[in-house]
Image 1 (spheres, helix red, strand yellow):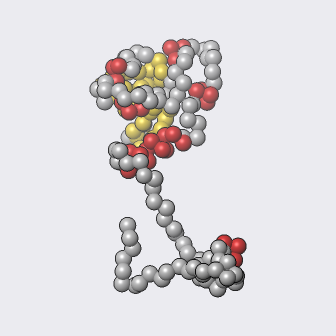
Image 2 (cartoon, rainbow, N blue to C red):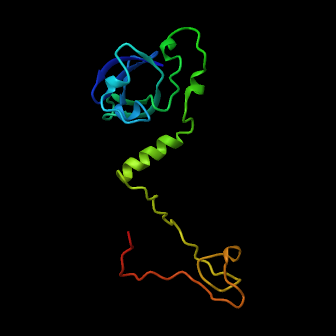
Image 3 (cartoon, rainbow, N blue to C red):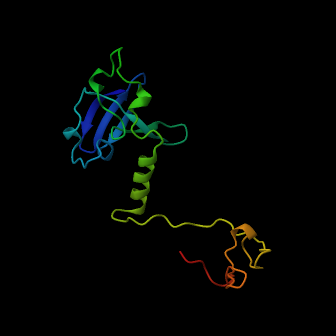
Length: 166
């Protein structure tokens, strides 16, 4: 739980309960819907439930930046966040407990806006084996798709002079 100590156009600074450090809830983490100005969602002095989504150290031995989110936390009863009686345990307020949605959101941002293509699959190793079933290279017998009378498939060797596609 935390208390909003400052609201700017780009987000809200929240004082974390039991800590002196403030964290930033960026406008993109205030709501699942687009927010132009943080003041549309929170106001100074308001009690909110937050989720810590990142902690970055500025420089070696330096201060820390704490990134927070309201988007993935149930805000019901947040006005009573500092009272001794709480209707829900803090861990039950987490709407994305395994950070699946958060990770997907961050992957979309890394790929760029409007791109809905998934990340390319990259092979990190190729077996240097010969299949005892078909005689092909690069796979084991239980992975073999060759039919006894059908076509046989093998991995194509990459020329040493050619670069990889990417």
